[in-house]
Image (cartoon, rainbow, N blue to C red; front, side, top):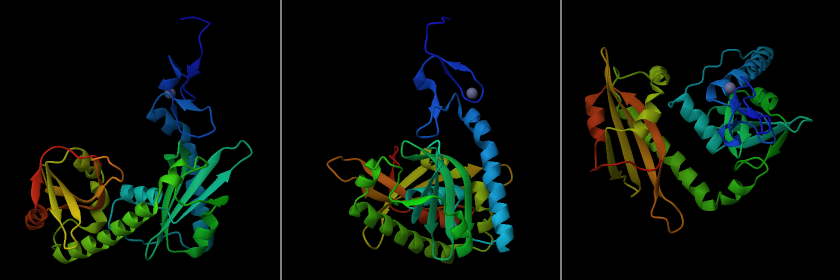
Length: 289
Ligand SMILES: [Zn+2]
């Protein structure tokens, strides 16, 4: 140890880190750095409570403490969708130039909201996720100034990359989602895992994408390619499959790389449904997500 050495330490636990690149950052325009995800959580959790209590107050005032909103995908997917294709983005800053972003995405019969910190153009910490059908609630939650939807803060680099092609692909994705969901609703048996319980299976989503047991490639009626990722879970009391149907998109440019985007993800204990999704060509190896 020496006195004459730059000092870097965790904002939360104050542990000393050998070099700057060991620090994790959550906020643009900030020197707050952390040693670990755990310290990031410890540091920001009081702010989660803060936003939750504002939400509670606003909901009480509007008489909408309990809003029943149903959507057929996981909470994680909801957050990902709101952040990746928001309908509105708002930026609130204080006099220290600290910024908080509010992402809002409108669905056919409700809106989803994510309030978060942004670092390097990506959401780095989520303070609040909520859904509502109330226009007044949305009016209350919009904070600061409205900024360009296509992500991100003042960097502008990503928004320039978001082309018309991207927009068309997003629309195609939404379109496929409604088709697949409608098909699934028809095929699902009454005794299959209920929609209300889908949130219990959220952790299967990343596991299935990262480490599927099987991947199948097939084409739909419109000729678009899908990859279906399947992972089976054998548990003591219940066995089930987690299935993710992803739309394939060839990256623009000369790169031969293929990207896939999740369209529909669900758990099922129905062997017939599982067999139906095992259609097309079975592929080995992993794909870039
Ligand atoms: Zn720490």
